[in-house]
Length: 257
Image 1 (tube, rainbow, N blue to C red):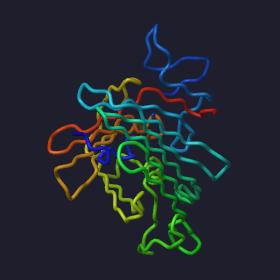
Image 2: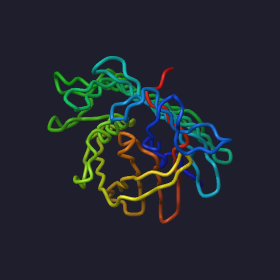
Image 3: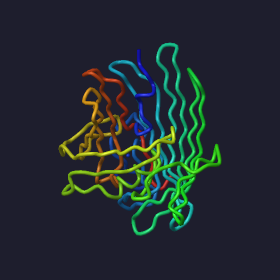
């Protein structure tokens, strides 16, 4: 049975204008990639992306990821998923209010909500960078964590990775507080550069693997430098069996609500 807790929020994008030349389409298909301002996307270009999630031949549902710019330095990075398998269902929404200073992501507030089979959960975390504290808003208390690290939540670190990604750097490490309000260290290693075809098109990608102590679980991530290091695929395995595969279907850069 598929366990949705193994489908991380990380499952959760080239380059043409609205004039409207788009990539990865035939005459009968709608455009899958749209660029509204006719410039090459960067890591901080606002976008709205949709992914289809499968397990083998089964379609489990969809994931949406969005980056919205509020002003010169402030952004909101959000994630939504709606997945189902047999009688099980899992719907998640995460958002992180973020400040960007010198290409450094500073999460300000993180919201998590999960509904579906099992217990519904909701989490709110605040990051106090002035006093170097992480606050559990739900319980009005400080979360105990080391002051030696720059802390992310489990979605804002993904934006930092988009900013950081370079072919000549082989490893990336991020310290984060997850939706259970626990410390985590996520380490990713670049393992290949490869051409990859997903529903949105064919791209030259950088493939990363998350480093885990539990070797039975494997997570691979494909990112496209040409699209501002947008994630185009995430695939998870456990004990050699595919658990979930999220692939990019459509993306709009400089998205307007």
